[in-house]
Image (tube, rainbow, N blue to C red; front, top):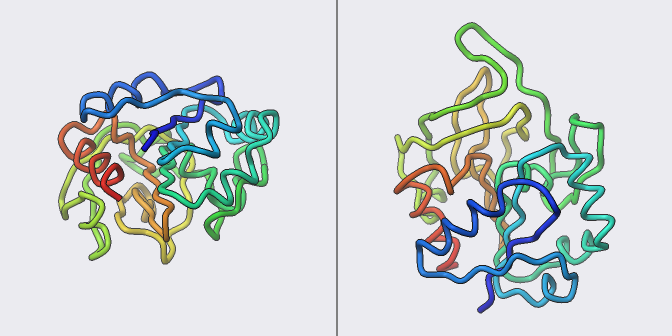
Length: 195
């Protein structure tokens, strides 16, 4: 099956490609709507702003393709946030695949924003099926996060519970960066490849 990383013209696509190559995959970077629709597995990456990302999705005319994608779909960082209904960042409507909104993180003593660095995970029973284990540390770099909800399979704390990973049906998201999270990130990506 073809693994396609959606090329929105920004972000961390190079490091994501390398992370999958280390696992023996041969990901294809693509902005072609037909190639995206035909992918066996699809990765929606993200480093940047929600408004910019949704504008790129609209420009490529792939929003409906992403919403209806029937095979494994993984959103990473901003890519996970785009799976939700909307974001306070740029006050933009997102894909609406998952219920809820993305809100700005509030700073707290010892917890600056952006949330950058390693944080410990609390993992639900469903999270173990995604290659995550209670107490794992993963790498974050973000100023916005979705609200906690029923799709959450792993959480971190940063002035509030932060969904670190979500899953519902064929859709998985990681607020953390698996491509920067060492062995834990590799396990998470392997789980996605096996789904």
